[in-house]
Image (cartoon, rainbow, N blue to C red):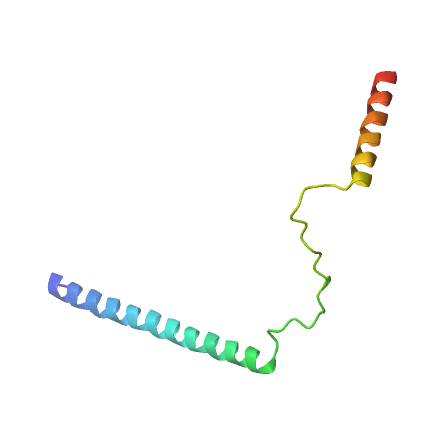
Length: 87
């Protein structure tokens, strides 16, 4: 087999292989798009479970604690320090 024939055969095989791969990818993309349309049309892409927690707690933007909370934290810290000193 001559060099020219080998180059010719390799060119034909290269083009044939690239065509097969391109055709496969093209068919795969079409199938995926059709599957996506079917899933969307049948409604299978929607979550049918109700959300776990629909109530959104209000955001507290201020960091000021009321006098009751301040007193409770202060009492807890004092009690903790007493227990640590006693042990």
